[in-house]
Image 1 (tube, rainbow, N blue to C red):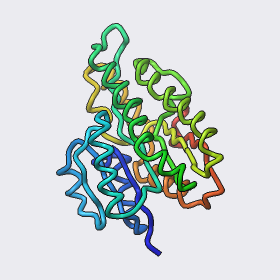
Image 2 (spheres, rainbow, N blue to C red):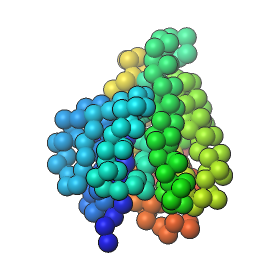
Image 3 (cartoon, rainbow, N blue to C red):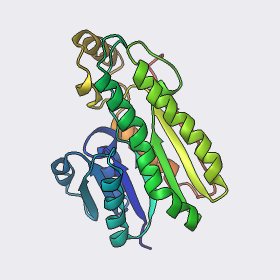
Amino acid sequence: MKKPLVIITGASSGIGKAAAIAFSKEGYPLLLIARRKELLEQLQLPEAICAQVDVTDFESLNNAIKAAEAQYGPADLLINNAGIMPLDKIYDQPLTDQYNLIDINIKGVLNGIHAVVNGMKERCHGTIINVSSVAGRYTFANHSVYCGTKYAVHAISEEIRKELGQFNVRVSVLAPAIVDTNLLTSVKNANILASYQATKKEIDNGLKPEDLAAMMLYVYQLPQRIAIKELVTSATNQLC
């Protein structure tokens, strides 16, 4: 049987890239979304539409999803993975960085949900996986606004899960601790960056993106009647 469409935002690197490869190997047609289309195309995955889209632009995101659905059928899985993590003290962090965190980490998630939720509701079938962080459960030094965005993702996910469950639509939150990705490229404070990198080194760089991709596959491939509501994960040797 033909497998349904999977949409992955932030698919050009890290967790999103690993998820794209994992779901492609399982035979799913994909809509891969990122700001750098060339990185998506370098993956050379079969049955994959590569779209250059900023998740803060709802119209562009919605149009890309409609085009992919016209080719592969209705989206059955949305992985809201796009995000940024510029870290700093609240008194040092520029407002532009704070606003970008809110626009991408919260509004980007809402845009993705809005683009697919009514179709899933009408079909009484679908899954939304929102990639959050342990920073959505606990606060950490230099993470104030980042934590705020991830707390928002958790809260939004918990409530829409209740609203959509009666329509057989699943909502899952994936909340990893440190993952070996390129999120740190947005950290401008050299001292904070060095401290974070030292912490990563102590735990062998933490989880691998492929670990998270495997979890997504597991969550999604369970029977639709089973919802994994939240997965909080870390490397075993990460103690906090």
